[in-house]
Length: 360
Image (tube, rainbow, N blue to C red; front, side):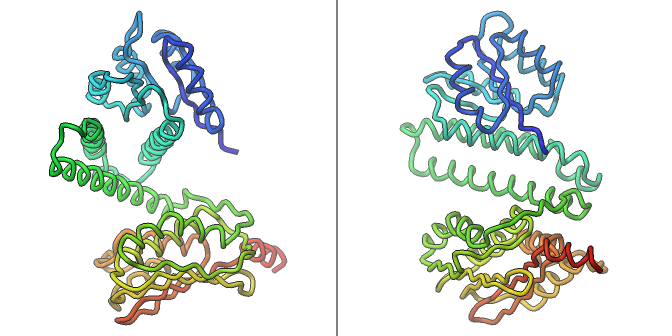
């Protein structure tokens, strides 16, 4: 069983420490420190995933704590605590590669969101150390660090919205959108490398297929409607299958996201039906269809076939989908024509497969 992530809250005010403890203790192990010296003792003594840090403390100040903590654990993620009208402290922290900042008074939802993002990046950095050198060389901190700085500064500028023109606000929105997309690509590459190397073992458990589809719809249906597309879910309320829920969710989301992205009119339909020893799922769109070469390259990825050249046409979505299909022991067929594409998934019940294998 995985240990809960550990968050260190550093602030000389007890109210701030206990407020953050109350917000985070449901998801994380929370450790507190009332001074910079005490915080460094904690970092030396035990592994800390994320630290929230008040820069304006008596004694050893937050900047000194940040610099020394990073010498102890270079991968430690730090969130700066700042009060209203104190963005200068946040800027100072961002210059020292803090992940982001938390504004007082705290919004519990925003605090949890930022902590989750910081934890995700720390985990990604850990995984980066296990991937091939060829990947490390192209996805080193020389890419991550400037991207993080860009996102941090653009967030600060956005919060000063009253002094910005419409063009400036639009430019900042584009910076944030493109930066988030780039970070997403980097995370996807790491995840695919882990799948290829068998570093993402299956976590098999009973899964409600209808709930998986509903969650995907909750995320992607608004984006589809923004484009004027219909969104429809056709699945029985009770459709269980034993598989890896996280990987199945990622797979359906990737296929549905591709459908939304490349469809300009019509609708997206998610269909699920029971099948012998599993379930079938379909993602249907009314887009322009996939090129035959794209389908062939996707089939090569699913089969794990080595080719003379890497896939030229596949985007990250279909590359990830192919690897997830292979990991889940599933099947994927793609039928496409100029009026739309249907991705047909056959998801086996892994409990049934394990029983059959044990008795064979």
